[in-house]
Length: 129
Image (cartoon, rainbow, N blue to C red; front, side):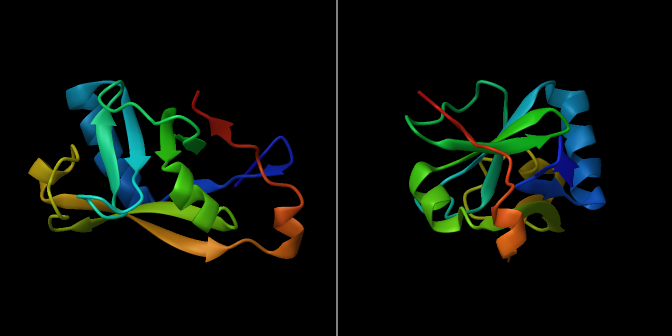
């Protein structure tokens, strides 16, 4: 997926979008945050917008249906050369803090490395202050 000739860092599967639409109807504006390993591991979490505050220098790598997708600053440094595809699975992830848990679903990310050509033209990331 490209925006203004830039290569997107983030995409979403149709199956995950269906869950997001369901969550939007119930909760309104959403946000995603993928932590670096504590409690929920590196499972992406979905919250009501403002339900989680990114730390200083965390990275917002894109939006899904207008909802920001933030990544822990250290995790981003590790995965900055990868494209993220948000997907959803049946079942419960560890902890269950994410909004999709009551639906019997869990978000997950599939990764692929960017090609050398893509790396030259990536969308910029936004950093929290």
